[in-house]
Image 1 (cartoon, one colour):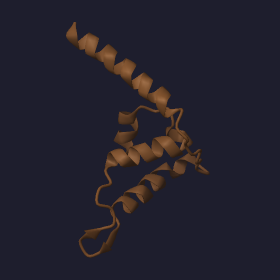
Image 2 (image 1 turned 45 degrees about the horizontal axis):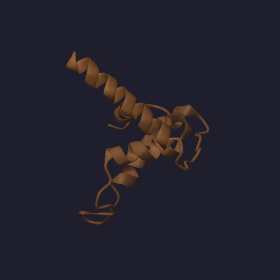
Image 3 (image 1 turned 30 degrees about the vertical axis):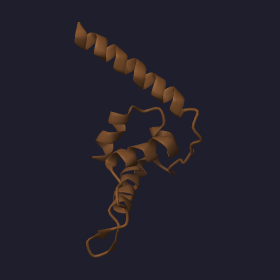
Image 4 (image 1 turned 90 degrees about the vertical axis):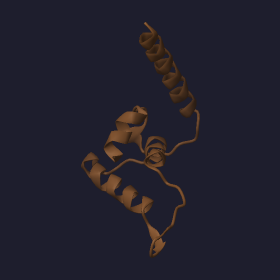
Length: 91
């Protein structure tokens, strides 16, 4: 009973967050071909791990969660998808 209640609360919260995110200014980047999705993910992972010199990363903090947010906010094919669905593709 408690787990059903929690599931309901989480579902409601996720819907509310999604509706708020739709109000944010976002990009509408589209790939020429959805078959390039793997290439896009590879590119973002390379950017995430760029080093300015040996063992000195460009970004102090740049997590997979950040990548998911970038994808959801700026790429049409990820807009409206659940966070954990996109996160599975990044991981």
